[in-house]
Image 1 (tube, rainbow, N blue to C red):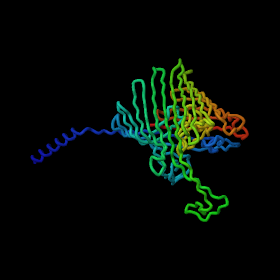
Image 2 (spheres, rainbow, N blue to C red):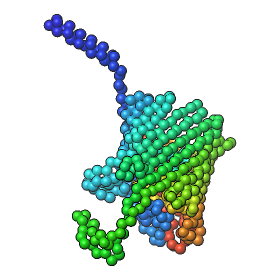
Image 3 (cartoon, one colour):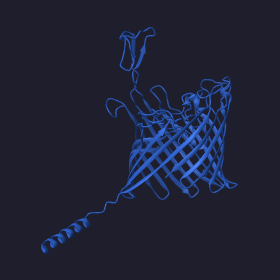
Image 4 (tube, one colour):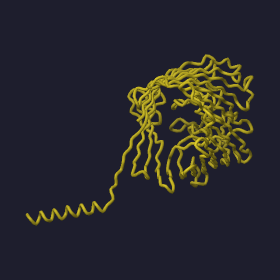
Length: 458
């Protein structure tokens, strides 16, 4: 018995010695996320304006919709140390309550019974932070240095950055798409270079360069003779035609090489904080079309009567100088201008899957945009904050000579939020758009939109 006790003591001592020799591995699990649900009453979303055409969403006797939307985003971070983290984010949302149940697909499952498979993966990336260099590797959120008018999306890539006492630099490579038979040959890629410098405490300047190369393949164009009669059907009901009635035309691969070069700044002049940028595009949109787009912006804000007065101006070229916006299958990857705080004139910051706007992106159907806005934010109490905004927009180049003017319209909107606690707010946002003479002749109703929102973040 005495011998056994000695053996147990020796074994315990050996185990402690081994444990002491191995570094501790403490993994911190961080969970965060958000939930939003809102009720929407509008005569604008009913018309299905998806940004493809500025005339969509504008009509006479526009029907009024009322619907509910919800979205949850869940994030998990595995933190090994202050230097190493794995970041993930997932999304679950319903396009609208009542859309479907017992189904499979993104945004589904909002009807009675639910039971749908629809989780979306937003981000999965490794984050490394060291004094010599920081890096992000994987599918990450990334936006341009020009208020998002070029791109603002989740994308797969490598991003390296370094901070100095008065400056920062970053360089990245991102793969937007790749659909060729040989991986990497027909890819859709971006190279990014970004630098910022603090001239002093009140003035910062920056420069950025984004090279976007799109060499993706395109499917063949299939044309069926007008008088052709089907000779059969596939199992899913697709018509089968005699090959003699079908013409197949090869479509050339994309051959876009667009350079985006710009400067930005932020500075304090007296009581006013100014921000702005100038961005120029050059290169090739295709073998026969040059990239000539450009954009200019100036924004400002100042304290006034216990609140904040804001203003933004944006000019984006159109026509033969049409601005290029990269995009994917969703068509939502960039070009929105949220700083104007519009609901219908620009994309709404609160919109989820149902996302509509007169000026959906900076390209604006090759017409560009001239836009100005002014807004005022005020904390009425320690729990209530309110805002009022007004904005106007016109096309920079009325390519198709629509209406009797380039003027798209003027929007006025108001917003108020009540903070239930540090994590939860209940709010109302409403807007009305006075259509301009660009839409003259349609005898269309002026659009309006009212939302009642509940937001939770943790």
